Image (tube, rainbow, N blue to C red; front, top):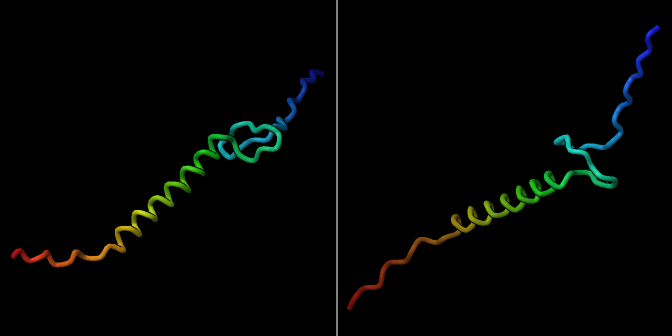
Length: 65
């Protein structure tokens, strides 16, 4: 009989994107940076939207003497 060894499954933990992780990591550095950027970008979008919504209409221009 010809017996070929079955390759063992890779026990290295991997990230959602498929990158190999070091011990104690839950996400790779690329995914951590992407998540940080998304949070900062969402906060920036909220600030600019809020700033535009809260603006009062300009008052009447001063009358020239």
